Amino acid sequence: MKKELSFVIILFIFLTFISCNKQDEAKTQGGTMTNSELPSIAERVKAYAPTVIKVDISNMTANQKKLVQLLVEAGKIADEIFWEQTSYDAISVRDSLMKLNSPESKDLLEYVKINYGPYDLIYEHSRFVGNGPQKSFDGGTYYPADMTKEEFEKYVKDNPGQKADLESQYTVVVRDGAKFKAVPFHEAYPLTLKLADKLDEAAQYADNPTLKKYLQLRAKAIRTDDYFESDMAWMDIKDSEIDIVIGPIENYEDGLFNYKTAYEAVVMVKDIEASKDLAMFNDHVLAFEKNLPYDKKYIRDKVGKGTQINFVNVVYFGGDCQKGIKTIAASLPNDPKVREAKGGGKNSMYKNMMEAKFEKIVVPIGQKILDPSLVSYLDKKAFITFVTLHEVSHTLGRDIVYGSKDMTVRKAMKEKYSAIEEAKADILGLYNHKVLVDMKVYDNAYLKKVMVTYLAGLYRSIRFGAEEAHGKANLIQLNFLRQKGALIKTKDGKFSFDEKIFFEKVAELAKLLLTIEAEGDYEGAVKVMEKYANVSDEIKEVINSLRDIPRDLDTSYELTGTN
Image (cartoon, rainbow, N blue to C red; front, side):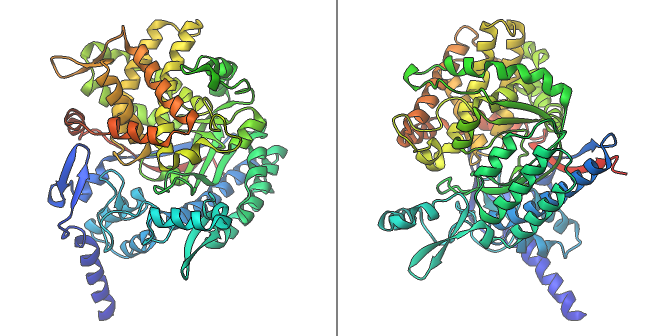
């Protein structure tokens, strides 16, 4: 008993104070802070507003209720797989903290859960607990922790026969003596078998044949790491109130090359009426493509005919989409072959997540930073349509580099892709509202609401951290529009627009980003990032003024009406 008590005391001291004793500095938005100047862990936890996301399924059939519950169980398995991907000691730090009961250790545990590990997503991925590297490894656990980017690139060049496997989205790279070896996810993560079995079990309760087929094919894909067939089936789901995204999806965790994908799960219940309201965007996808503000040689003739927009309520988030800043929408699948075959992608708009963020974050930010004459223009519908057109805009522009048969933009852009793509989708989400005004779908009064809400949203996303893809994307937009004079600061220190040139400069930035992607111009992306993805003193000052407003949500999930 005495030994156990000693272990707990030592563990507590180790976990609570090891990071605080380091003398390294942590960069933050706009400058550098020593650890003594950083907010306390309790303060950092408070920056994420506790939010219970509730969904009532009392109107569902017994089979539907059972299906939803099984899908949540599957999501929790995917969540645990993601813990294996974030950092090499994420699970050990989490599990060690779970053995402690002090207020300090509880705060640390909560913050570890928010960040999915001991590295702070807001403060430049710096370690805040545990013993190890003071900055997280850019490659997560996808590559050996001692591997350099140059070492990997040289090895792939010297061993072209291994290139496809080593650069695959679905492998972990390990050392094999003096060589590198690619290990498929389904071998690297034993929990994938349990996840596949759970999806097969859930499929037994799916009365909708298209959903049942998808779940069965997804289980097969997780066992084999071949996702094309299941992605195609996901696009074919029809007339189902229930949907799910599950498996290795996005590339954000691979900060080295943007090759590897991270496990996540989104269990959704469709809001049928709201989906009907936004279905009109589907009718305009081709018009959006034709009106893109760049060289017409890049314009695609076939786009958007199969694009779907679904308004859903989130039942459960797990894994990558739950880490730190919570996702509010998604445009999937990412595979350009599936998008081409289906004529577009599926845009899922997370209604309950968007509404929570608008009320708790966007409105307070707008009230703080906007010229008082603009505050009344903050609008929930404008926030929702902007997010929707952001996701639609992921389907616009080129997936394959111009002049190439199979070089994807994602692969050509490497680690710069995510930030450039998010910036492109944002600025086109704004630009396409102007296209809809020109088409008489919206009027100028609504367009002003979109502009105002967009500006408040920029500062919401910049607070994600300058190292995060969405944070970088919003820095690009804010700095570009500010430097071009489209966004102005009043004598009272508040923000407004130069409406005469605003959309001219929006189009200019859209052209720049679209052209970089079309040409697969990695060096062009580097230049944009170096010039615009920076935190100025002005931005730092504004961010500091928003300290009392939550950065994001600390969400938990509750199902009601299950009996």
